[in-house]
Length: 312
Ligand code: BDR
Ligand code: CA
Picture 1: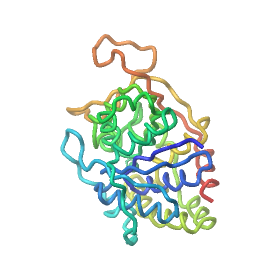
Picture 2: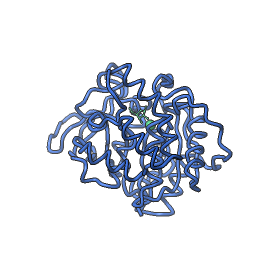
Picture 3: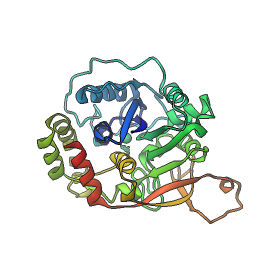
């Protein structure tokens, strides 16, 4: 199985992604590393531990960064994920504890112990990945791939006309991740806005798998209500769990290659700017930028089927 570390800010769609990964026979989850984002890093860490306890898996959780690397923190979006990150369902606190290592150290150690074999799946702001690169720059050459949910190439943003939330929460860290020498695959709003997860699918998963499915269904109600009140849609966008589907079944996605950089200030802050492969620009910000694989297309039916069958 492919070894992955999931860097996360659970988060309702993070919970979907994590249970999906635990159940995927193609994947072996080495650990969960946490970051601020949907909630504080302390709550994200508790929530990650809760998910391992619900799923009854022995997967270590390492706590990561509490604030963005340069900019001031933005408020946590409790109107999207609830104040508890799980849609205000009043779930009891977990029994377990995080490991001693920081998230960045956990990433470095796991990558060093399995050179060339570890994929980092990033579902939140990218501070832990940037820190890991700082601790040990060689990590960029020892990771198999970085698959991240974040950004948008041509679709509108979700926190500004051009910015997606995970990138906006730490644009400087994101720019480091996109310009390091590892292979990055970006799964942003270009594809996640093409997939709508509704209660019909969630109800079927709950019936087949009351433990994980029941929990996800309960959490998702707050999330789905947010989308229906804000955008008049029935269901929620399938953000974070798309990364897991990509690792299991990459053929579901259509990918374009290009350079990606992140605007770190001004009115366009948080924008992932995409320059398709083959376009060259003399401006220094655009010379020698590594190629990112940017997902542009997705087969929504196949994706939702894969999610449902894996979790059922
Ligand atoms: C991303 O932001 C968070 O709210 C979600 O968990 C997802 O990672 C979507 O923009
Ligand atoms: Ca997330």
